[in-house]
Length: 47
Image (cartoon, rainbow, N blue to C red):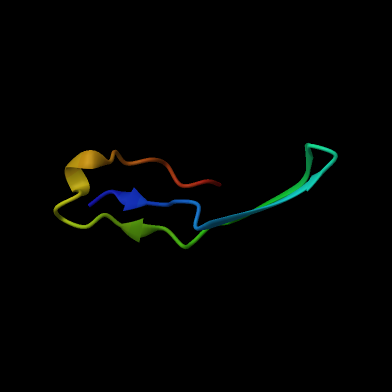
């Protein structure tokens, strides 16, 4: 089964209309559900 990873939460700080801080929280990779596996393709995990 392909392994998925997705951004769980993104937090931003904006000052004077500009993004001053961006924080992304990534969950641990997980296997695609059997009924969704045809919608994803495997990727190499980051090193």
